[in-house]
Image 1 (cartoon, rainbow over the protein chains, first blue to last red):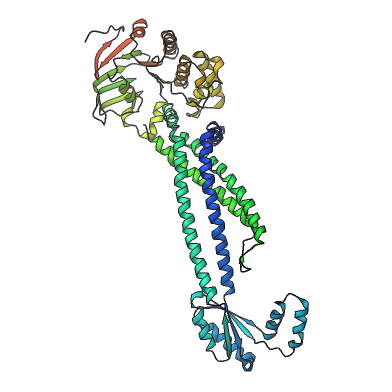
Image 2 (cartoon, helix red, strand yellow):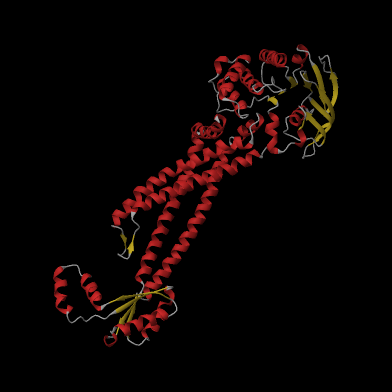
Length: 304
Length: 230
C-alpha cells in the first residue's frame, strides 16, 4: 500500500523539485505559455461576446404582423394564427392583443408625463392586435414576411429589417473567422511551447540517459517530467488569469456593459471570467502535459 | 555470468569494432579489459550493458540474452548490472544521497530500506559526510566513488567499470582500485574493468583480456601485461 502511494506521490514531488531546480528553464517555458494564453484569452473573450451579440440580435429579428381592424374576432384570429403556423420556416407564433400593444407602447417611454399624455387614447385604442413570428432561418425572413402579408386579414407586416439580417450574417462570419484564428493560434502556440519544453528537456537528455543506465523504466523517468510540464503550464496561466479577471471587469465597467449601442451587450463578468480562467488553466496544463510527454518520449528513444 | 559467443559488431557508419569475440567470465571474477584507443573496449561495454546490439553472435549476461531485449526492457535488465563510467554520469541536480538512492527508488524499494542501504553504501565508499553535497562540489575521485556507490547500491551481480580511473590521478586511482577490490571480496560481485592504465594493471594483478583492433589478442589468467612493440 505504501509503495502504491509512493508510486503516485514520488513523481509529483520530483516534478515540483524539477520546476524549482531548473528555475530559469521553467521560467522561459512558463513565459511562452503566458504569452500564448493571453492571446487565447483575448480570442475567447472576443468570440464569446460576438456570439452573445449575434444571439441577442437574432432574438430581435422577428416579424410583427398587424391584424386588420375588421378581422379581430377570435375565430378570424385563430384562422390567421393557424395560417401563419402552416408556413414553412416559421418557428413560433406569439399573440399580443391590442391592449397589450398599447401598454407596451406606453411602457417604452421613460418619463411619467409622456405616459400620462397617452392615457386618454386607452379607450379608443388605435393599436392593432398582433402576431409575433420567429423564423427558423433569418436569411429567408423577407420571403416569409411577404407570404404572411398575403394572408387575408393581415393589414401590415414589419420585420427587424434587412440590416439586422445582414448584421447577423456579418457577425456570424466574424465569429467563424475569430474561431478559426483562435484555433490556429492555439495550435501554433502548442508548437511553440512544445519547442521550448523540448529545449529544456534536451538540456537534460544526459539525465534521461543516466536514469536509464541505473535501471529506471521509461514511465518512471517520464512521470516527473510530465508533472513538471503540467506545473509549468499552470504557472504560465497565472498572469493570463489575473489579466483576464481584472481586465474584463475593467472593460465591462468602463463601457457600462454595452459597446456602440444598447444592442451589443457584453457578457456579465461573473461567472464568465471564472469560466475563462478555468479554461485558461486547463489549456495551460494540457499544453504542458502534451509538450513534455512528447519531448521526453523523444529523448527516451534517443539511446537504448 | 558473462558469456560472449562469436560476437561481431559493425556500426552503421561502416566501422568494424569487434571481430569474433569469445569470452567467458565466471561469478566473482575480477577481470581487466585493456587495449589502445579504438581497440573496441567501449564497444564491448556497450554490448554488455545493452546500449548497442551485436551485429552477429550472442551476448549473455546473468542468463539474459542482451541483444534480444526490447527498448523498454533494457533498464530492467540493467538492474542486474552496475555500470561505472569514466565521466561519472551523476545526476547534477541531485545530492550524493539522492544519486545513490535513485538507483534504489527505481526498483521500488521501501523508503526505510533505501535510507539504511544508502548510508551503508556511503560508508563503504568513504563518503559518510558528503550526503548533502551536489556532484559539482566534489573532487573527481569523490564523484567516482559516488558513481561506484550508486552502481553497487542494489547489490548487482556484475559491475562494469569503463575506465573508472581515466580522469583521476594515480593516488586516487589506487583508492578506487582498493574500493573495487573491497566490493569484489565483500559481495562476490563479478567485476569487469576497462582500462588503459598499465601501471594499475601491473600493480593490482588480475585476469587481463587484451583487445587490439577489435580482436582478443591475449587472455592472461595471471594478469600483468607488458606492452610489446608493434
